[in-house]
Length: 85
Image 1 (cartoon, one colour):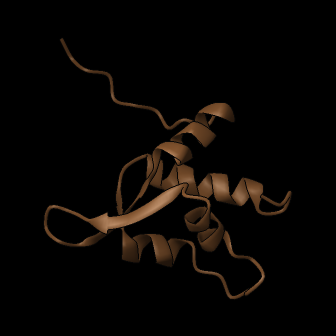
Image 2 (cartoon, one colour; image 1 turned 90 degrees about the vertical axis):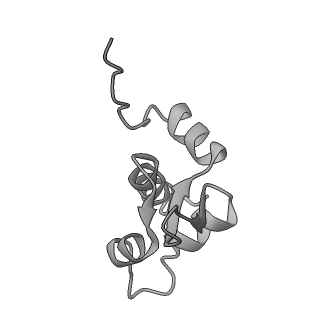
């Protein structure tokens, strides 16, 4: 990844690693008017995020294992809920 895109790609992966999000929400939050700033495309091309269908058949975006690994290596894993005993 380029030095310019690296932090933004990590931010996008962290955004969807927190929980699978509807595709429309992700695209709206990560829309850009600059064709040279291709955060979404870099994340998809590198296999860091993926699109799929949710239980209600809506299109969702979530982090892949490669995306989670990228966050772990960078110390950016999202907080996980603690299971109650």
